[in-house]
Image 1: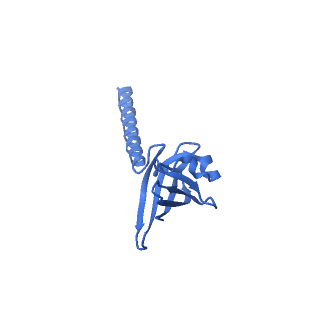
Image 2: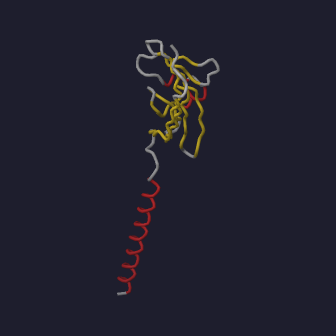
Image 3: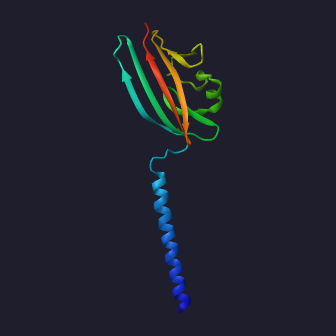
Length: 144
């Protein structure tokens, strides 16, 4: 009889531990991104100057080992960390299909030139917070 009571107590304790684990892991999942994905955190636009729009976008990414936050086809994406370290921005294919990519002289960003001559200039700022990386896209410039 005492063995039966001990088994019931042990089973109850195991169920309690399991429920605590499930509840705790659910709280950890909220706000976390799946590995290899990004989300836009902030997006600000300033059109106060004629013929020029300045946009600042910050993305939060949960990248896999060997990757870091970047941009592919004008969208936040995880890219090879080597591209960011060497500042060879055009290797991550940041421009839209049909646009030409050129590095800025000081490698602080890149330009995407559309067939009609419109130029979008993007400068880069990045920092790490735990396992997430932020990548800021700055200065969308219209030159004709």
